[in-house]
Image 1 (cartoon, rainbow, N blue to C red):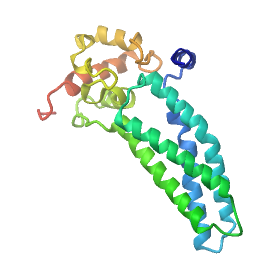
Image 2 (image 1 turned 60 degrees about the vertical axis):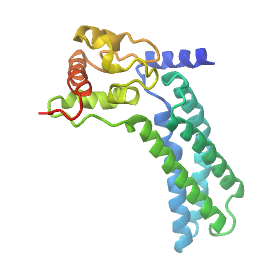
Image 3 (image 1 turned 180 degrees about the vertical axis):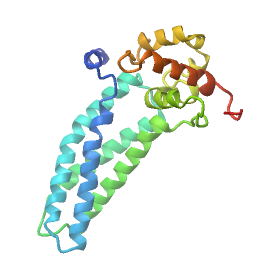
Image 4 (image 1 turned 45 degrees about the vertical axis):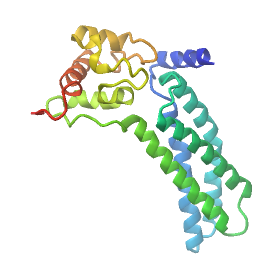
Length: 238
C-alpha cells in the first residue's frame, strides 16, 4: 500500500504540487456542514422553513465528500508522517469516524415535513461541534508546537518556515524522527549543504524545488533557522 501511495505522491509532486491533498479537500465538507447547521437553525427559528431542505442538501453533499477526504487524509498520514501515531492525528481519526457516522444518520433521517425536527437539529449541531474539534486538532498538527518569538531580523525566513517546515520541525525538532532534530543537523553547517538538503531530501521530506523556494528564499530560511529556531529562547531578539 505504501508503495502505491508514494508512487502517487511522486507523480503529483512531478506536476508541481508537493503539498498534502487532504488539506485542500477537507474544507469542502467542513464548509457544507457549517452551511447545513446554519440553514437548519434559520429554518427552525424563522419563517423560512424551506431552508431545511437546503440544510439537508448540504449535509448530503458533505457526506459525499467525506469519503475522499478520509482516504486522502490516510494517504497524507502515511506519506508525510510515515504513519507516526501523533496524538492530534489519533484524535482526528476518531473524530472523522464520529463525523462520518453523524452525517450518515442525518442523511438517513432525511427531510421530513416543512421544518427540521429536534433530532435533526441536534445532529446538525453535533456535526458542527465535531468539525470544530477536527479543525482545532488539525491546527495543532501544524501550529501546535511552541514557536520561537517573532523574528524582527528574519521575517521572510520566518514566513517560509511556518508555511513549509513547521509542520514537522516546530521548535527545531522532528516529529517523524525525534532522534534527528533539525537543530542538530549537519546540514545547517553551511548554506550550500542546507540548499542541497531541501533540493534532494531524504524521504519522507518533500522536495523543495527552486520554483517553490528560490535560492534567495532558501538563504532567508537558512538564516532564520540558524539564528532564530536554533537560538536559545529568552535571549535578546533585537
